[in-house]
Image 1 (cartoon, rainbow, N blue to C red):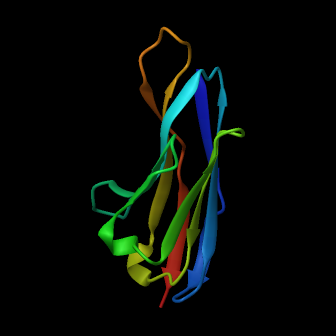
Image 2: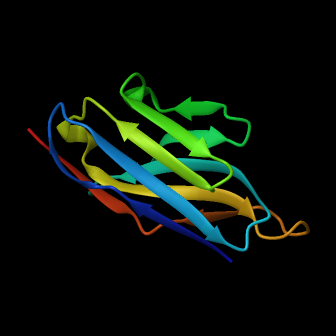
Length: 121
């Protein structure tokens, strides 16, 4: 099995910065993508940013030029540097790894428990 654990959330004023970290552990053969999603109260979970195993990235339009995702393949970790935070960025942020636990297993989605990010105005 694969476990995913996030850290780094908290309370910050508008315009401030936070860095989220996520680590995948357990029985891992390969990780295809690692990404960050968020869910605000009353809203659906949405993609924030994702990084592929080759280093390519994809960002939601609402975080471009403010957030940066980075990945360490050797450590199975991913980070999200969030700058210029806005009150509308307030949400629970979830890390997801798309991984294979063995060479013969199909890829599955593994989610962390989420970390709260609150941006005050």
